[in-house]
Image (tube, rainbow, N blue to C red; front, side, top):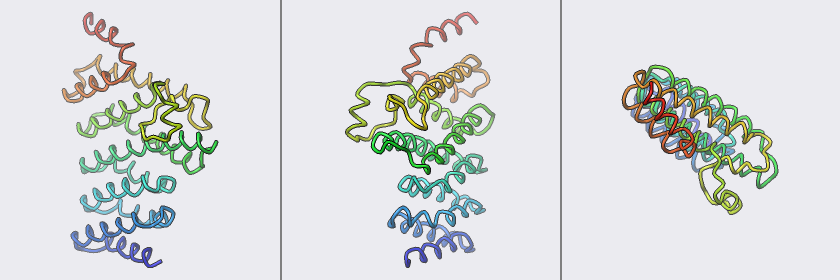
Length: 260
């Protein structure tokens, strides 16, 4: 109870104090408390933490993104109230905050996928809180696609394209030792091959189709390179080269560029 009251007081100071240094110090101390208590106890304070998204100080918002990632990944099943904050920050006027939000949400996306797959393997079911969190992850994926397509901050678009690359890798079948990795509980980036045998929430066929569709979008980027800054074009090419599916499209790309 003392820790909760102390954290509430610190979050209030971070939200209302007139001195920026006090705000940042209070927020850091609140983070330490949130990390030290049980995830369920920390989750009780998440709504108060989320209120800081409206802080006019960019340094407070930037620290908030870092805290949400660190605390939220530790208490993933309780963090649905925090994910909308990161989604809103993807359009923050401070490009540093927008970029860090994309990075943090990418880590949540991978973590949620992995936890959903492993939870079903181990327990034969997926908790409703994770299903709800997955819906937020779908919203993030849609938002990242939109940012990658539209004119805007090059840095944020680069990270959104990097997320597209991550989606392709996650949803491209790689059956090499996947059963062994899952069975032994080793930590490895989720792959759609983990879903062999079915899953109550994640449809492997739909996810693989999504990967294929994403590659099609990336190909469209390459077909019209004049619409992209040079750094984005390079990012798209690198993204394509990291995908095993690229082998199915490489000849097509060379042919199209040669004869267009």
